[in-house]
Image 1 (tube, helix red, strand yellow):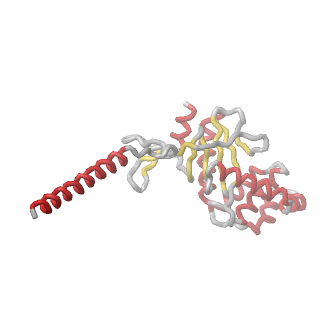
Image 2 (cartoon, rainbow, N blue to C red):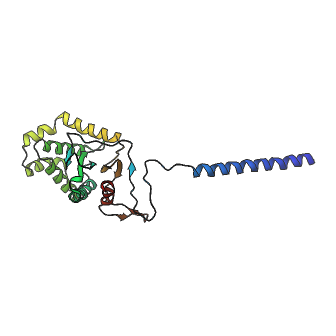
Image 3 (cartoon, rainbow, N blue to C red):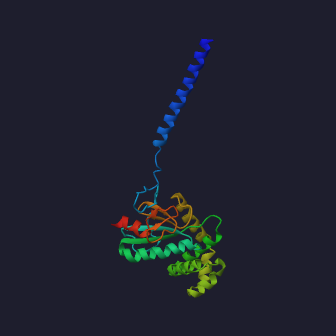
Length: 238
């Protein structure tokens, strides 16, 4: 009977020892977990950058639509949706960045449209087709102005063509060209390879910046101070 008792006690001690070992191991494993490599570090007391290291980044192409010179110190690549208010708001912020940074910065704009967004694809083609008549900047500005006021209609393109005094026949022929829609799809597919999942998305100095980042530093809903676009760009060119 005594032997059974001692076997029972030894069994309990053995189980307890196993539990302690596993508890220590779990603690060590948790402490050793790496912070995701693509998440930029947050510095207590300072504005958090909240950008993501990109596994691949765009490069300037001869066919790119651009504000500034392709030899600029810092090209900012922007994937934008011309039916999207947030892309329109970001465009205003980037205009301010470009005006203040001068030749140091170039803004490279590229279209992005979700697979189920026929309107976004059509409007991207509209900017491209206006560009064939030398007015892509004007068409882009007009579409964004409408998007901000939530008055944008893809079936209202004839009105936009009239306002910009484009050649309607040439514009419509371009708009219905299969090669044009294929070009937009190619741009979107390339963006997705870089990790773009929605618009607006920027690439600044090898880092991905999501959403319509405000110009000035701001405090988010968690009470964290986030670096505005002015600070992000300044950190890349200074």
